[in-house]
Amino acid sequence: MVAAAHPAAVEAGVAVLQMGGSAMDAAVAVQMMLGLVEPEASGLGGGAFLLHWAKKEGRLRSYDGRETAPAAVSPRLFLDGHGEPLPFIEAAVGGRAVGVPGMLRMLEMAHRRHGRFRWAELLQYAIFTAEEGWEMTPRLHALLEREIQLRNDPAARRLFYGPDGRPKPVGTRLTNYAYADTVRAISLQGADALYRGPIAADIVRAVRGHAKPGALTEADLASYRAVEREPLCGPYRAFRICSMAPPSSGGVALLQILGMLERTDFSSRAPGSEGALHLYAEASRLTYADRARYIGDPDFVSVPTGALVDGKYLEKRAALIGERAIGLAPSGDPEAVGTTHFTIVDAEGDVVSMTSTIEATFGSRIMVRGFVLNNELTDFDFQPNSRNEVEPRKRPRSSMAPAIVFDRDGEVRMAVGSPGGPFIIGYVAKALIGTLDWGLPLPEAVRLPNFANRNGATEIETGSRYEAHAPALRARGHEVVLREMTSGLHGVERIPGGWRGAADPRRGGVADGR
Image 1 (cartoon, rainbow, N blue to C red):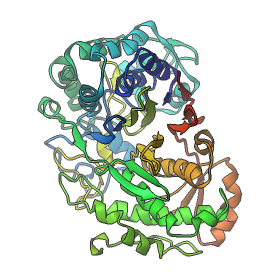
Image 2: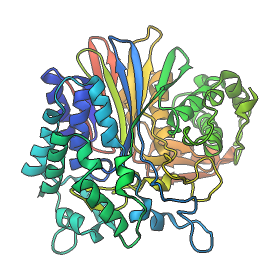
Image 3: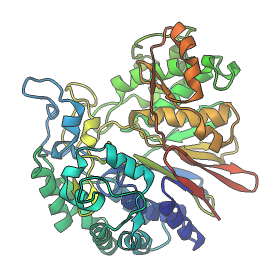
């Protein structure tokens, strides 16, 4: 089974599985295709986190391909001449925000350990499609219509826009020969083709030569290393939930939200009710307060990961939740006691849950050699003197939360994840609550309205049935904001006799298997 955000990527992954490839083999084919057909969300110019479950070994591993800051940056990277934080769009567009891409190094590392097919074979699907062409989708067209900055990049303008400066019509056959050439080089030389030599030189030239130049050097690219980290796991009711540890805040936040809800009467509240949303919003509010204070790159700062998800600490935090909104929640004191996503399961029961990103839609709006560069450095705090301040070679805090759920017998019950920036945590938590608490099949849980609280307003997906809860939530003291919340949840769940896939209708993804 493969669940991903574009049919071409799912088709490539399923083809690999049908030929006897592993989940990791399929992941390589899927990600390289997504970098082509979903260029707004992920690709060679970005980073990723990956969970891999090896059924025969009974072992879960996590891989960190998060971008790193160039060696020459300073904590004042996103401050203006008066020491004030830059507006986000000014910081995000251009070379200043580009971090060292990490996805490809991580993908290569994980494939060497868990792949069965030759690396070069798995890249042929993306090469073929780049040269033969694929159709402009309604989603990509709509994003290009809204996007102002990308059309200023000459390579992107040639690929996506017509002579009139408007995006090419839906259904137009797009070809990206530059991407095909880049992936062909990677198929022959491995990840080194991106991190050393002519492609690396072109990346650096584009970043440093931009009107808003960045500090990236060829030495930064050559020195990048992906990291295997211990996955972060914790209990929730009768299940064991595993996700990414820092520098992603995703795993900590998921376990905190769910752990607090377990210590309230959440299970007695009707599914999708105003009372259930209230309790979720309060648990999320408390979680984001801790996230802002404590989570950073563990190679640079001390992160009290274990203490943040400790049962006694969560009990104290849950005790703060009442029938009225807290308002701005304070962080706790744990010392006293976290784009696109795809999910794959192969015939042997091995599972890959991978979230991949270039940060904002179309990243830095710089296109090089057929792919878009990230603007991931904007995930650092703009103001210095925090655990997530900008520092040389540091990895910015992330919200990515690829998750795998195990049942009481140690079998994979479900794997799921989502893009969505700071909303990723809420999207994934919603899917877990929908299945594990409310008993919904995963496809139905994915379709549930989105809702979140990032230690501020309680945010509800506009146009959803949860809008009806806004007056009652306001009566409890919530500030309620209705907004577009475009999740991209993709996952698989075990059912009698096999697997069921789930793809978020908000992104046009699909799930398929054989």
